[in-house]
Length: 321
Ligand SMILES: C[S@@+](CC[C@H](N)C(=O)[O-])C[C@H]1O[C@@H](n2cnc3c(N)ncnc32)[C@H](O)[C@@H]1O
Image (tube, rainbow, N blue to C red; front, side):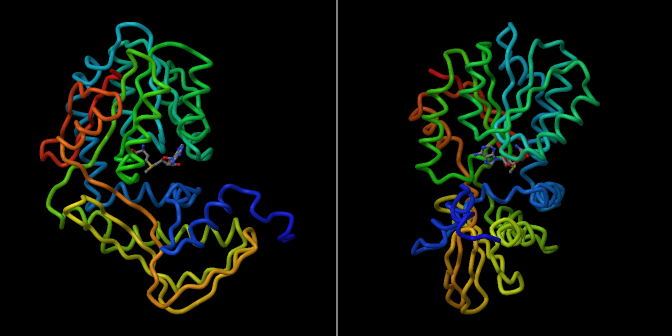
């Protein structure tokens, strides 16, 4: 590989360099989802410990009618899903909305082109009458492009507790930015994980079969393959924590020994101490009053909370004020 030619040309390489050069090292969780990461995430969603997917699945199954009544503007609308993934739970809503003859088109947004292609093929087979337009862009670029294409009212879905991956400051700036690209009458339905028994939460991120571990380690394999890095996977371990005060579940990769790793695409060598953590992901949990506060601070008002039978998870519907 001609390293000088490839050095830092990709955003991936720049982000990795920024994270591994910081005093407290980190890697962005957005890079978890290559083709293998997408597949491992599907296994995570199927794990008994990973209650989040099951709760949102239950909410959609039990309350799809109420959700449709609450979001339907009565005219044609665009259903836009940020970070659609495999659309596993969204299909419940899509099927119901079609049965009820709601007038809508579906726009899944995802930076993973693989995942979008698979989703579109599946939806075309299952629901040939549904118009699906893939938006293979980062969230805000996708929304700006859609605003240029079509001015029907938007219902934006941001499911699966994706917002939990943001720090409180980033969550606030994310919703402020989202508010700016939304038009009056647009709605936002966000899936948010709620604070609960800390054991239940931690187990969801530390399953005994090691699926979450392999999900985290897969990012090192991706860097080896795509950035010419020389991580030795066996020299790294997965370490999750949960802080019940902040509601933050954090996962780290720990260096099992003192070691150096060279990444051709960044042109740098990074030194790791024995037991040095690299922060990978935050999964933040909220209380309903914290969600209402966040909505109010970012230009929204909460229209309705849809919770599961155990009050583990909420799909919170917001109106742009
Ligand atoms: C955790 S999965 C969630 C999938 C699905 N929404 C669910 O609830 O199961 C997150 C998805 O968001 C996508 N994603 C992450 N960051 C993104 C960004 N900034 N712009 C667009 N897509 C993003 C990833 O590629 C991945 O498919």
